[in-house]
Image (tube, rainbow, N blue to C red; front, side):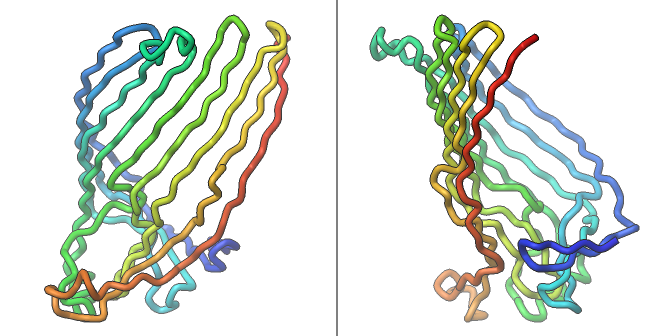
Length: 253
């Protein structure tokens, strides 16, 4: 079955031959809890994806049609650090404040099939024989600044999130792959217990309202010495999502 993407104004083709992916996951993690509501942790991971799924452009239809297809395999590995610290060490007046931070560094590798690589190198002789796993960012950053007062039933927090450019659409005919561009995201959340059963919540998402952009790069020069100076970006799609505001109430029966 085919569907139409109203955002990109493109057609997504069905694929009856699509197979589910299997994942072998290995990880190790060290954690330390200095006090209540505090954590320090370091972790590493390695993942093997069998039959990972990626979105491919249809060469015959240009940028108008896409289809989900299986790749042979992918490997993903990396590390993560995380900490959360209460801020009363600065001042006793900040006993209800805390700050959390999380950073993940990731490397993903997906081999390009030989027949596909041959077609790609017909127009891009210096293309590498691997590419990232679709949807996998090379880094992730998350942080939270929070005020929490149990006696007042009050919680207020500001969160920040950011990811590195991530591959979203594969090209198998020599055109550049399409990448979703990095963007910062800030969200605000507020909740207050009016009674033991009644709670009010308020939130504002996407405060910065960054541009949601997908772009691809191409080279003006076939000389690898000048490659970094000759790359140019072109928009594939670009739009703003806008800010969203939510207000809710809940009552526990």
